[in-house]
Image 1 (spheres, helix red, strand yellow):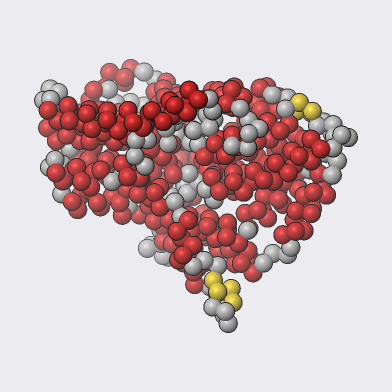
Image 2 (image 1 turned 90 degrees about the vertical axis):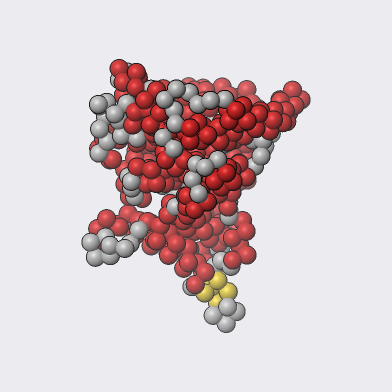
Length: 489
């Protein structure tokens, strides 16, 4: 990053730290717009403060998420119980369970074994290697955080790149190193779309719809949306990277198979910890997928309960009875991204304030004139706006701030809230142009082998591709999967 870029990134939080409270105070001193309830205007002031601080990252995003607990009771929006109840939403615990299972995969090394196995199976032709890394990264990101996936796979990718660069006989040509690293980052981002626990905006969408619109999205139900997105987007992004924006060529990589074989051999046979984590992972995923079939006999079974059950097994089933060792101890949970769970609660508390104060209805009424636009155009506008906004903000913070707004707009136009909220949640995870957009982007940029102009060039093409893919696929899937009415009225 240039000195100017570093200066700009350091200046933004300082500006936001002052601008947010200033806007908040000015709004409280001004009268509410005509027809807007007073409480709704106060919620607007809180929302403005939170959005400014989230976008500018003036404070840690989780710290900003705690503002409703302080401000809503003081402003008379709700009592302390109403402000804190969203922090105990069941979907937060679904994500907590998923985080713990993913932590078990990381601690046992199972995720690395899975990645090496997939890469080895696809072959060592340069294009096959790119495809293999994308498949492995996307699959792991469906279950493990995209940050952990990128950090685990980056050393493997760099080893392959060094093998290519250090072998004079290698015929791998073009931009192989650049393509492989960008493909790794982009596949981590795309893979998270596949499951409800794959990326925070997915779970935040489910929690928002459940909390404010009594619409429940189950794990298996989301797969009907997420898997088609991953299956369609992954090969298209692969083609854009290897055939359109950049070029990679060459034959079988000399020494490639041996390197991957040695890496797997170095891991040794599957350890007891890996086997137990694999068993818990398979059991949990199977219960999530088959829950609709089991529910008539176990009506109290839920996706959240399944996630916590799987997580508890990693603390309960011992690796060694005599040594009293387990896959995980509570000390291991210090590595969990607790800030994401707090951010969930803050976003849901803000959404509840927007709904209960009448602000949601006011926003919906203000956008009623958009009813004349086709639903496909509305989805396109929401997806494009969120994709480019999340290039410079946290994807989870973007989703937390804009899901209640877009849900309110949809309701105001006579649409189901999921029609605009779901595409926006997916779009929040589709930022590919800048290192600051997502952790995987930052991780591969940190390898010093990818420049910002190179990432921006490829990312712009992928952004445009994902706008088309997300808009088109969500338009056709929303009615079928969620029963959403796609016609205003």
